[in-house]
Image (cartoon, rainbow, N blue to C red; front, side, top):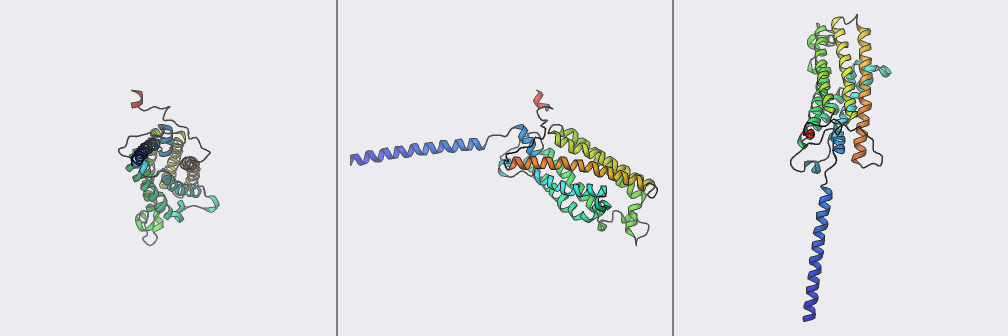
Length: 280
């Protein structure tokens, strides 16, 4: 009886040691899983300097940034080709209005909301505003919204409103304001990476050329057709540069997400242009 009792005591001690070792292992595993990513990796994945957020939402949910980039690129790249008139394309990609709504608008706006939930205010603002841009752009081209038919002198020919001076002048002002917004985003992007800066930098001449084209058409639609077309082609080329930078940053993020052996640098600026709080 005594030997059996001692054996039982030894076994209980071993079990206790095993349980303690298991708890130590779990604590080590949790500590590994909770290691914070570097500022360089954070801004590469989220296109934003590291921000403090309550809770563990970034560990619970996935990264919405690539989804926004997909919506942006699959809308902007066809539009840039349309503006340049490749293979006879034109008319601002009216054939792809649904793409502007359900890829550019929906994906970017949804991603912006998710970024906001994660506490990433800068990409949330960028994605939601550009998502709204795509919704508005698609709505302007959609006849049911009556954006251009309102300016038509003949109700039976609503497309005549596209040539109206007031329509083109009004559309130009919208693009001017978008250019100002892109300039603001470019300044803020100096705290992220070089590729993100290039995206906004290349948008500036695009918005400027588009504005010039619409205002030329507002001044004299028939007489300035050739000049306006040149402006549209230039804007398309500038937007194509935007798309190249966008594809690069999308590939770099996707490679990082799947832990691909090849990693693409994006030119981290977060440690070069230091934030105000980092200087204290």
